[in-house]
Length: 307
Image 1 (cartoon, rainbow, N blue to C red):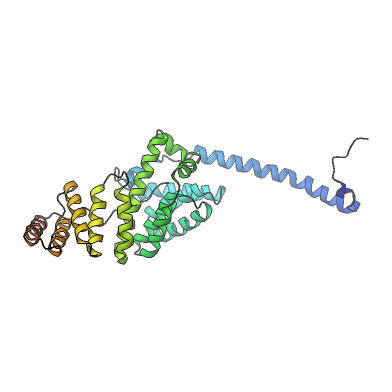
Image 2: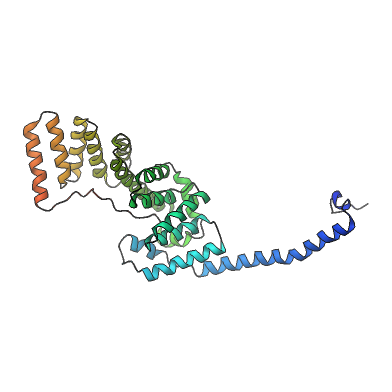
C-alpha cells in the first residue's frame, strides 16, 4: 500500500477544521511567494543604486570637502535600505556613519547602539560608539566602548566585512586584498588607543592609561612617538620619574618639536635631582612655545570607521 505523504495527526483533525487549514495554506502560499519575490526585487534594486563609497572616505580623510547635500543622499539610501532589509548591521552602520557626519550625533549614537545589539563582534561599530561618546564628553562610556573594541577579533571582523554586500563595493574600489584590509583595521586600532588614552587621562586614571600606552608601544603602529609621550606623562603623574625620563626622551628622539614633552621631561629631571639638565630642558620647551610651536599630540582627531 502506498504510504500517505500527510502526517498521521492530520487524519485526527475534524474534517471541517482540516479543510479550513488547507484553505489557509493555499491562500497564503501565493502571498509568501510574493514576499520572497518582492524582497529579491528590493535587494536587486538596492544593489543597482548603491552609491560610490569612495566619497565617504575621501571627505572623512579631508581629501575632498564635505558636501552635506550629497551626504544626505547617502543617508537617504541607507535609510531606505534599512526599511527593505531591517536590522542588518552593515546597513545600520552606514546609516549611523552618515548621520554622524550630517551633525545628527544623537541619532548616530542610537543607531550604533542598535547596531552592536545586532552584531556585537564589530571593532568598527564599538569604536564609533566610543568616538561619539568621547566627542560628547561622556568619558566613562567612551572608555568602556573603546576597551570593548580592542577586544574584538580581527579575523572575524575581516570575514564580516568581506562577506557584506554593502561593504563589498568599497572593498572592490579601495581595498585590493585582505592584507590592505588588515592595514586599515590596524590604523583603526591605533586610533582607538589614541582616543582611549585621552579619555582615561581626562578622568585621571593614569594607571590604566599607562597599561594601554605600554601595550601600544609594543604594537606596529605608525606613531610610536605619541605613545611614548603619553607613557611619559602617565609615569610622571604616577611618581615614576626615572621611567618618565626614559619615555619622554624616547618620544623627543622621534618627534623633537614637542614643547610639552620638554616641559614634563624637565619636571621629571628636577624630581630625580638633575637640576642643571632640567633647567636646560625647560628652557628648550619654553623657546618652542614662544616660537608658536604646539604639542602635536594634543586634541586627537575624532573620525569614524566605515567598518
